[in-house]
Amino acid sequence: MHTWPVQDAKARFSELLNACVSEGPQVVTRRGAETAVLVPFAEWKRLSHAARPSLKALLLSNEARTELVVPLRGHAKRRPTVVL
Image (cartoon, rainbow, N blue to C red; front, side, top):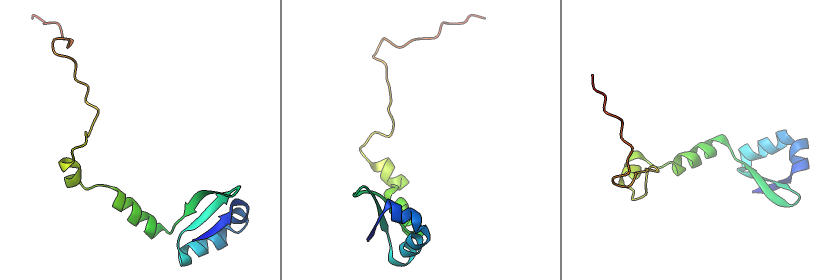
């Protein structure tokens, strides 16, 4: 991966984009600290697809799927009975 200071990345964006497509991910730094990475779109799609679990994995996981708030027994608010 090639590293680009933010000033160079702004001034030579077309070159940065071409390097990304031909060479792979490019790192952009701000004041010497790595700040962002420009990746080709195909790589982005592959990474985002790989990070998303399948439905089967979600259903079989031991982790909670939602924050379920259940009131303590006997403390649930009840609707008043309506007599017609």
